[in-house]
Length: 76
Image (cartoon, rainbow, N blue to C red; front, side, top):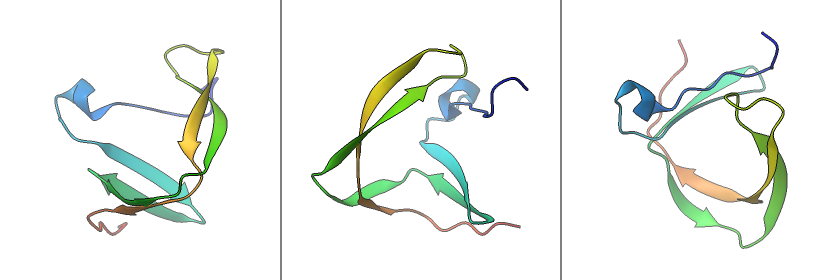
């Protein structure tokens, strides 16, 4: 794989949900329809791209800190 990443939108496989998977500190967190509970009004900018358009990046504004509510799913 040339680029270090993989992505698929749930809607691409006819699932109208917000879905994400994050690997951090040897743990896997599954996000299914997460909701913001609290957002800090401080922002950061990241250069983000899309695997469908390699080499093209945009500066994207994101919340620096936030809390989400999510259904808990355990990693097998």
